[in-house]
Length: 465
Image 1 (cartoon, rainbow, N blue to C red):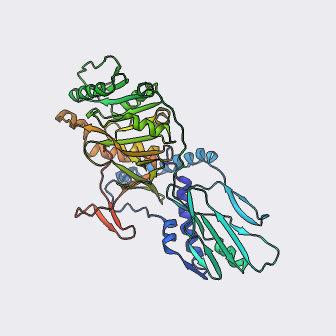
Image 2: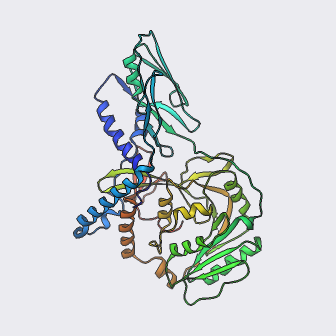
């Protein structure tokens, strides 16, 4: 059972709230509410979500389903536990006690730093502690203790000074670390595009579209290999030089086709495109290759059609015994990719992307998602793949649909309900909480003054964007 990588982070955040409630009763502190709110995070509330996986369970099967889900979740946690770093704290012979490893922080997340304490048997007139963060984050405090002076709040270097050792140690209990920068490495290789990239796609009942796509690929990249997974009927032959056409069982599904196509790639990178896309003069694959060659990103997307580049932030909000929430921030990113000002870190991107072949295979495409599953793939990739979206590479999008195609593409509420039940069990996610900065009179938008934005409680996003 894939509980989405953030099990320990979720538990830490829940423990943070309990600890905050306990230490708030101690007094003698001035709370820094802005920093405190970052530590507390969002609340997992599915009361108005239309994408509610928990509600998809029938009452008569709810108890048995819940027992089975809890059992599988515990088995998953036991499998995961040996892979997680244990928390190690160096005792105060320095005389400062501090953690040396075992802490995990989510992107742009905030955590308390446990184990900070000065153990000094000598009386001193003044005590001074200086803490340094790496290049990936900043240090702050959630509360200010009386008779303690702090410098560098919200910066990489934090200095704490006091004439009272008990007050100094009390202040150290409120020190937090916030992530602000992704880790990106650098390499450089210069090779021919065709030797590094394979184009893959899945087609179904849209032969006119796929032939247009293949023609435009040949116009700009005549030697690049293309793999087509096809579950149409009747079959039209697409096999030709540099095109490998794989025929599958009728209507076997979108993700099954993706898996087949990925399994046949022999180049280090693959390029995923939908069958109704079309290459053009701005489909500069060398730019995407350059990003992957010179960063440690696993997947990088471009733009489709005439719209803006699409990127999304997704995070897990701890819930209760019924599961967690997937918080989705559309049109937001995690920051700029160093060295690539037109690329921004993201959690979910559009269906036009280049990726490391081995990285995609490590995540895979669950064939259970036969008609929809865009968000679910990136949900499975959370914590595994480093992803970005760039706005300087574009591919055309010629939407083509027929009545027969639409019957499979939009199968109705019964299919959606089955998929929600499956997602709930697989990811331990009871609902999606959509968030946007844009205002609307739509009833799916709920004002959220805490975050200066709006939650969107609509069941969207499971199709390709």
